[in-house]
Amino acid sequence: MSSRPPPEPPFLVAIGGSAGAVEVLLTLLPALPASFPGALVVVIHLRPQVRSLLPSIFAGHIALSVREADDKDPIEAGTVTFAGPDYHLLVEPGGSFSLCTTEPVHFSRPSIDVLFESAAHTYGRRLLGILLSGANEDGAAGLAAIARAGGRTWVQAPETAGARRMPESALACMSPDRVLSPSAMAEALRSLSELE
Amino acid sequence: MTEPPSDFDIELRLLLEAIYLKYCYDFRSYSVASLRRRVEQALEKFGCRTLSQLQDRVLHEPSVMPALLQYLTVPVSEMFRDPEYFLGLRREVIPRLLTYPSIRVWVAGCSTGEEVYSIAILLQEEGLLSRTTIYATDINPEALRAAEAGVYPIDRVAGFSESYRKSGGRGSLSDYYTAGYGAVVFDRALRARAAFSDHSLATDGVFAEVQLVSCRNVLIYFDRDLQDRAVGLFRDALVRRGFLGLGNRESLRFSKHADAFTELLPEVRIYQRCS
Ligand SMILES: C[S@@+](CC[C@H](N)C(=O)[O-])C[C@H]1O[C@@H](n2cnc3c(N)ncnc32)[C@H](O)[C@@H]1O
Image (cartoon, rainbow over all chains, first blue to last red; front, side, top):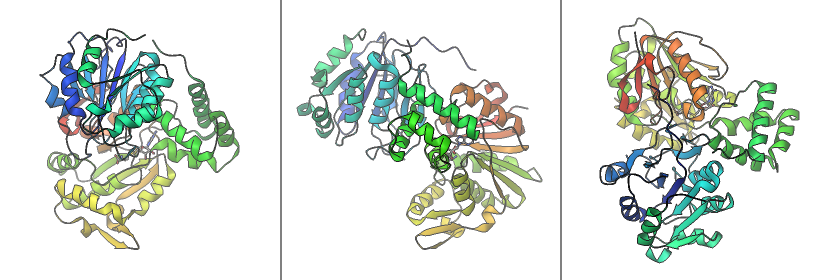
């Protein structure tokens, strides 16, 4: 039943958002081809008791494969991994995800900061962090950690966000590499073939 | 492709080694991403600048290890967490346990006991509790004491009741506790059938033969090798056709021992030992 782990993707794109972020994903993810060389991981704030609809919204409608994270799932190129409700999602060294049930951060579990900080630690320069629309401050500290670790950071332009607080909190504490509208972000992501 | 270890990671390895040598708690094969975060929080709490400073205190100040253990072990739990799991036990597992004259259940990594009381209530309602022994084990002595006391803050009870109801509960959760002073105490009858004891999935062996192992949200803290060790213990403890329940996001997919089990209710992660 256990199989050999697939080769690690050359880079990881970690995306975080809350209110207003699903709309942006509907622009970003369909823009990407099945041959996208990186792996994607997404934390969108969810209510804890509710089953997430995200995987089914996207599965079959985009070229990439889609799943909800289980403990120790391998990080695979061309795959979008969504954090499920009620667990933090973290990036382990050696190319896999792990989960944990410690207390919520910024009232949220999964938390974007938790994902971003662990990804920064393991992926360093091979990481792109993207922070989207949202109504709280989760993700700002995590994005700063990605920048410190040498990774790249993009933030959704606040004026294009359904809820500006999340991108604005990031802009208040760090200088991202780019501030982009959803359509410009889709274009930039699509043309990304490597990091560094 | 692996980044060279940071000073923090080097010091973390040394700290875990020191803890193992001095106290026999073995955290060396835990998932590092979440361990790192929890240890960072501990640094703040103990007012240490580096992990080397914390290591010095762990080795020389007796009060530090028990406090640090609260960070390393994640002692959080809820009654009837993921009600569908308990509904699955009620509908598919309990009826299959009815044929045994005496039943033994192992709740591994029981933390502060919420999972133990959830299972005890379920067994009670299905008429099995009086012939069941529940082995409730954990490595955190403080959590085990709380589990044995069965006292929980009253503000958590509304959430517990809601989940109890969704898990197919036959009565009201208030049938099982007494309230007072901002807390509730679960009935002694529920824990009379439970034995709470220290047991580590990382260092200890099998201690009993059981028909059901419930080990939820513990394996996520382990790396794959340690997960294999723990699942190996479960396999060895289980009778043929015995049951293993894991957390919502845990599976045997990556386990070396996957072949020893079949999926009984894959959507709620309940497995059955092959005969
Ligand atoms: C998040 S709690 C899970 C509580 C409960 N099973 C539930 O799902 O609600 C994890 C528990 O695993 C325990 N644990 C950690 N390492 C362990 C080990 N090596 N052996 C046994 N228990 C362990 C911790 O002390 C903690 O109480």
